[in-house]
Length: 311
Ligand SMILES: [Mn+2]
Image (cartoon, rainbow, N blue to C red; front, side, top):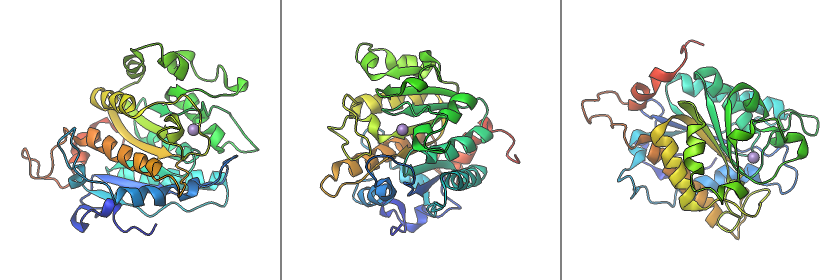
């Protein structure tokens, strides 16, 4: 990555020791089947982030004051399995440092590694997947670490809740509990889907967002754009509900496939990432406020839900 600090934030907010937040870029595109280019996603996301205003109007906060450390990118790409192992190791390393860990892909197979790490570190983990595709294949093209298998493991080892789904293969039917799949055509008919999806989650939630969940009219730069997707404010309202009612322990955003003729998708991804951080930290005091003396106030807020830190 050519950017030294996330979003051009000052060095004092970008160091690992004092940062509450870690961002791990994973520029990986080894298994995508149609349009290549998700390996360029992290750089386009960082470039758009550097051109974004850092005051969030809605929460009246500047979340970067909590510190955002831009980690070295995971560049292992010798095989899908090796990439997943590398993502798993890095994610776990930073969770153990009591950071709020976030990742930016890359294609969706990177989430196999991040979800595995969070599931090892947090009790009764739910995975909230916001995606056009079910991604529930056990194996695809000879690998269990293909993007089409992104949440198969999560469906077996966590409480998986899927939102925005509008494309799947018949072999995926029945892999996840139908009660926990919120299909786009049903969401359109049910004003209460956000409450129902939130209720389906346990306390500890990892969120994985495949940008193709959004309608291609607002986010066309993804590998497989599917019509009939989610819009900006309905997505933010839902995320706000989840961040308010649950303990979101981390998240990833994947499948930005940049197109030089469309900067709006890069910018949507940048803004989405920052919005999610703003929702997470809006009620967590900054160092020096409300009697907190620690540089890393997330450590205090987040630790209590974690499994044995020595795992
Ligand atoms: Mn996906």
